[in-house]
Structure formats: C-alpha cells, structure tokens
Length: 288
Image (cartoon, rainbow, N blue to C red):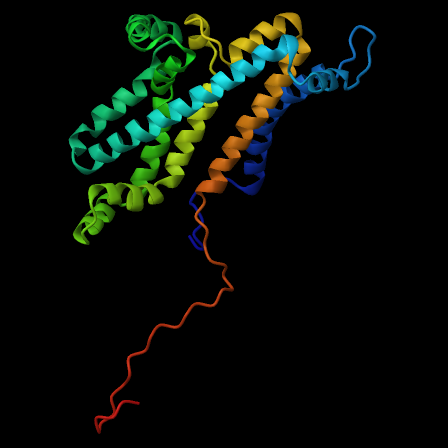
C-alpha cells in the first residue's frame, strides 16, 4: 500500500455512484418543492408571483406570526447550544480526564434520548414543565431544556469523536506542569484543539432545533415548524417557500462545520525558517 491509500477503498466510479445516488435522494424532493412554488395556480404555467408576494409583503400581516416563531426558534437554538457548551462539553472532558470508568455510563445516558419516542419524552417531561412553569414561568424559552436532552445523542457523538482523536490527557498534563490552572487548560488548550467537534455539535444542535415540531406541538409552544403548519393550512405555497429557506439555512450551517473547523496548513511552497545552527568550535578554541 503506497501513498497513504486505504485498503479495499472503493474505486472512483463506485464513489461517484454512491454520491450521485445520495445526492439524487436529497435533490428530488427539493426540486419538487421549487416546482410547486413556481406554479401559477389553476390557470397553469409557472411564474414567480408566490415568491414576489411573500417578499413584497415583508412577512407582515397574516405572516407576522412566522417572524415571531422564527425568533422563538433562534432563541431556542441559542439556549440549546449554551446547554451543550456549558454543561455537556465540560462534563465529557471531566469524565475523560478524571473519571474514565464513568465514560460508558455517560455514553449510555447521552445516547438514550434517541431511542425514546417523542410522545414518551413529552409525557415524561410534562410534570417537570409544570414545576418549571410555577417557578420561572411558561415562556417558550423553557423548551430549551427539552431540546437540550433531544440533541444529546448528536452532540455527544460529534464531540466524543474529536476527543478520541486528540491526546487530551497529555495536553492537559503538559499545561498543568507549566503552571496553568484548570480554567486556562480548558479555555486555552482543550477547547482550541476540540473546536471542530464542538462546532459540529453546536451546528447539529441548531439544525435539530430549527427542524423540531413534535415536542413544541405537543407542549403547545410556538416555533418555526408549528407556525409553518398553521401557514400551510391557508397558503401552502408560502409554507413551502419558507421551508425551502429554512433548509438553505441548515445546509449553510452544515457547510460551515467543515469550513470553520478545518485546520489551516501552510502552503507547500512556503519557505520555512532555517533552524539555528550551533557554532562549531575549532581545534584552537575559536568558534567558526
């Protein structure tokens, strides 16, 4: 095996067929959605009046609840990402460094929500939300606690894969040996080295929150998806246009995962500074 090639790797033709098939599965529904929004109506033909009507109105009037719902979803996404960054990441690092025997338990706890149906999750969270509502109110922001549990499996896998690829223990011990406190170790050593996994977990959390419908609907909260369902009952064209725009935003977020987390390497043609050479003493004691 030469040149770093992977054994039994599929040929370029097979890779192209796989990527083409997967791309087609995603592309066909998107094309169908675009074609639907361009229909002129019962008169037949295609035009852009559904798109122009939406942007000319500026989402005011009957579509204003969509803006409110979009603001709710953005706020929920920020709250969910905060839970991931402030609770999940430090907990995973603490378990990895100080309590490695608990790693399997933490993994089971984090993966468990993906196997629980949404209706069961809502029934289990209802008593908790009744207590939360009495203590701090029943605003839509309280959904961030439920979404923080929902995104655990996806965020855990993304961050844990990065932790496994970095020698976190050696980095932390080296920083501690040089006199750094645990805060500096976390913020200045570990987080920069784990930024790709953390960014992936954060962006996946945003994508899950923007596309979540079941929990918000069952708990009678308003987010982007529940508002789109209400709009679709009166104007299905506008609902599909807004869904396309939400998909575009999610795709851009996923592309940003690879862009922001990629480590920039110096170009191959960049000259490197020559290492300092130790003077060679001459037999007479003079340095050359």
